[in-house]
Length: 327
Image (cartoon, rainbow, N blue to C red; front, side, top):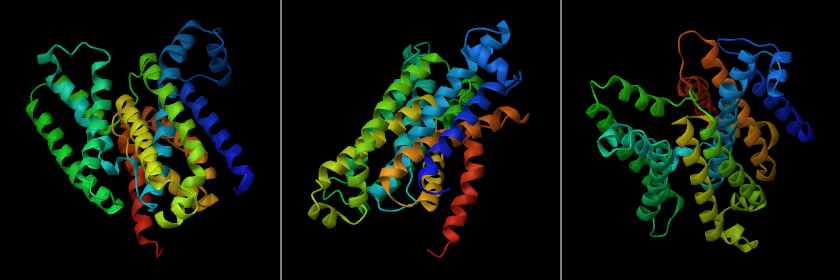
């Protein structure tokens, strides 16, 4: 695939993955049954399954995949390193810690039944983590300082999450909910999760698209970009904020899902080149299709695979292959 065929091809793959997400599961439906259910007709059971369960789950997966794909491109441009990923600054770990804190401490604080408490805590945790990284790296705010601060903060946030997990030992239901956030998944995602994540993720992706040319110039180096008219400080701030918003919302509705923001942009960069004006929209489409395909695997295998496990099984070997490449 080259040039103009890239976009239509990825759109076609995304449509196929989306329709497959509506058709496959414990109750398998044909294409005609899916289309009839979407239109409000057909069998009542099929209509309920598609419209009340599978459609919101697929929309959440689409939004999360697009957000992680776009965030991966941003982080790789920000650090000028194609091995960077959305969780590098502790956003995913902070979001998970916020969610786990509500699950572990919520019943004692009277928050256990609050629908919005868990995703709100996840978003606040993600922003707090990024704020802490920027605070630690405020002197000069070089990419190296940001990177090292993110690594250290990820370790601290992981320790906090592990502590909360061990503190709930013996509470099977709470532990199961915590593992959902640590391993990622789209189970039981409903329309409330769609309205929580999809509109803001769509807005964040749209705000990123005009920054593609500036990201191309940033890849030449900060001094070169500055000399070509780019306000590097402002651009870096925009990239950090938008990447944080997208990753935080993805974590809030699906937990930690790794490797999407690493694998998808890197593969597309190898196939279609490094231009961010092309890479950003392609990574949004590719990330959405990839996540829907991975979620479909979790539903079709009888052993109860988690979404984070599937993405890791794909992304881990790919990452090792990247490390073995001479360039």
